[in-house]
Image (cartoon, rainbow, N blue to C red):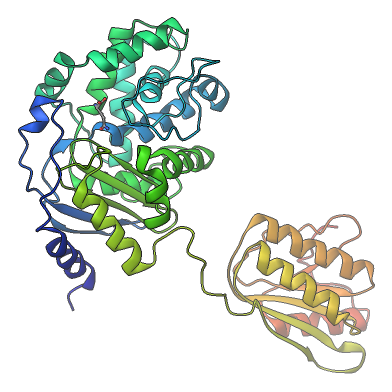
Length: 442
Ligand SMILES: NC(=O)CC[C@H](N)C(=O)O
């Protein structure tokens, strides 16, 4: 059977193709010469499957889509404090190339506008690197996101540098405020090369998928950046990635995103997919016209908006019943699904309201597929309190979702693979034949 995804992508590309409004970026002559009719879209899943339609392997320059990735490198290389001291995280509501800095500190408002991105470029790599070493760090880092070595388009770079007066002005202002310590021209030169890296729509989707996949490139398996950095970058993309169209984007599309003036556009949907589109004609904000339309379609057709409230999960407590009778009766709370805070709270409530009178209580995780840290701690606290109330507590955990359970002060739990084993263990406990070997600490 043919996959439905490429057919869907081709259909949506066909729908937006007739829209020839907008203009390719004019201020970089080499970009103005690009074929404006190019059109492509790629989905890359967090487990590495790539679907595409249209011009997926055409190379174009990454431009501002490099900004979130360079920001990620700066955060990784220098740490959050030093980077935040020089670049803020407030949406500016201004154009990408606005010559504006915070009036009191001289700090650029965020790393997605040029002022912030130029500063960010200077923060990639370790302190004291020369411009060439810094550029190499950026190229190597962005290549790790893409999963292949990227190269600079020298003619686009040269073309932009000839007309880089505005970015040079911004860099000189940054230097005058002490935000940049380096030679402004060298930093703009490096930043412009960073923007001139050649990518395909496929590369961009993989870079976005790396963000969606907690910083791990789905194909190479490389952990490019750590999770706290991913969260920071995606947050800034969602508030500032589309410049002065960020509010419209957040409400209409709702996917952390970044655009570039060569016509690329990426979106990263945490835990699901990286999306990239390519179409060079831009709107007044400098965002790809057809790219924005494509993302609007993807988001509404497939419910990809991050604020979309998920359908209420099936009850986390699948059943609450008693096995056996008399002194050997075992109360079983059979849980199911993925357990996050809200689900764990329901388990807490169920155990309180049940107030089990049976000696044995088992929390059965057989049908649970995931459990986060806070929920794990909440379940162990339930265990501890049940122990203090005099119960024998069992954790039925065949897939070791709770490794080395430690219910803490006064708590005790016996881990088993099946409810039947809990029944046997309880019988042994009642008959005073000692306890099974796999006991949790407490
Ligand atoms: N929005 C963009 O893609 C702008 C990037 C471009 N290199 C610039 O600095 O002007």
